[in-house]
Length: 190
Image 1 (cartoon, rainbow, N blue to C red):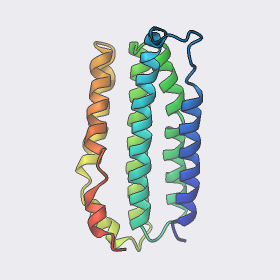
Image 2: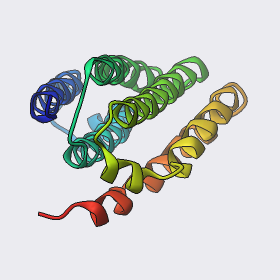
Image 3: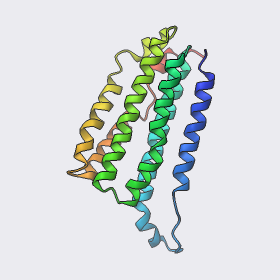
Image 4: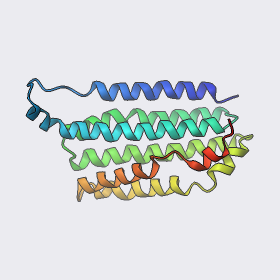
């Protein structure tokens, strides 16, 4: 089967995830700018999560755009990825409400770690489904994907020593992924 329905369904789920995150933002009851100061951790975690979701959406789009065939494994692998991404609003709220405390930051990293693993599994499922030669050429060994998973795994225990440092490491991974994978873009001929 083709990738159109998988991509459309995923786009809808990701749109809902972003909507849930923004609905968690509560304005202050005071009209002064100073009343926003206590909300800075909440806004910071929201911005970071929005960026992460955007990165996944962009790379997922590229991944499915170059893939020409999906099978049942791919559908379940995609649902697995969407499951982990659906937890982002929960950990985002927990991090922001608790001002980047150790456990919330560690769990945030756990969700990022398992999202990264799920994305890697989706890539492997697409490759195993056959007929995705351009995708295989574009992905290669996927060094960046494997490195991201490793960095998340290292950063999670760091949260219990310095939670701000763990979050800074998560930001570093996001910076690594801000530009969509050029290997895939080079393979796409529209």
